[in-house]
Length: 432
Image 1: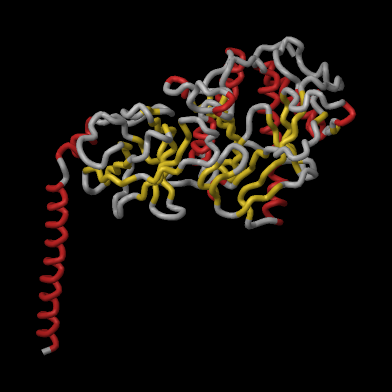
Image 2: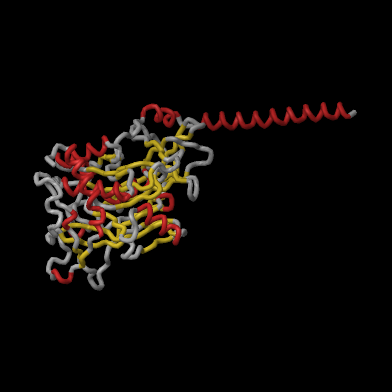
């Protein structure tokens, strides 16, 4: 009797399993039949975007990159630039791995608060990936139906994040113009390395041949990654940060905000910490030896913080100290940052900008001087712990010399900096 019951139970189980499989197969076939043929064709004919900036067919949107982000949900975030008033609706077309066709999802267009009145702005397009889709590619369109042939396809990056290979990475955005300031460029690069940076990412629009030669040296050294940034091919770009200062142009600072957010997601899983600054800016620890030591202490004291704001100080380049006048070859063009040891005091009732060191895995969207969305909190790092050495034209040109604040923090690195910079300059064929 027991064997008979077992035998009947076995056959009932087999029949039930067969029916379940039949149902799943028929559902899959029905789904495949319903897939429009144009969608299947699109996968074979649509080119994969290879450049760092890709325009869409609407001529009002450019796409930078797409990144997988499962920190809140099964999302894909697309870094883009678009005309804020004219582009109100976009769709992410996911190419789902097991259905051999595209599935459209309406994008949430996240426009940052600090676009400074330009008609075009960096945005993040947020699209939730369809369930069980496992898409490796995505296409962006203004419609949810019809043919999508001809538009570019973007690889979804950060699908398989690795453990960080660097402690610190510096994001430089954006490099434009024709400056020949080679000495300060090399000094900044060597200071970043002394302070603990293993990698520097430069979003390069243009530079002089002398700067290009220095960049190529650091690329060969494995320190610099260059992201081409030809934003001016597609938009009228401005050197100014606010539209009122340059009303003829469409986007400020060569699309700096888009570059910063792309650098954030590009390096999210490659580095423990990320710094955002310009090439004339250096975050200087006053109390600690380098960034590693400083961040170890700050993170231990403030484990809940993920964004560390460093107060900006302007070191006017027309006020120089002559202690290190002969430290570098005279034929090298550019400024010697060791000469800049006086900074301007803060102005009453004027906001003083910051630059940041962040844990990139805790940041959703960044601005230039502060994060726009992040997990965890901000920490205003006290001036006696660190400050931003920003050498540039004076912000307060009429301030008396006696009101400037003397700061020789940079000099504690002078011996190592002079040695390292002269070694690089020698490799660049300057006479040392």
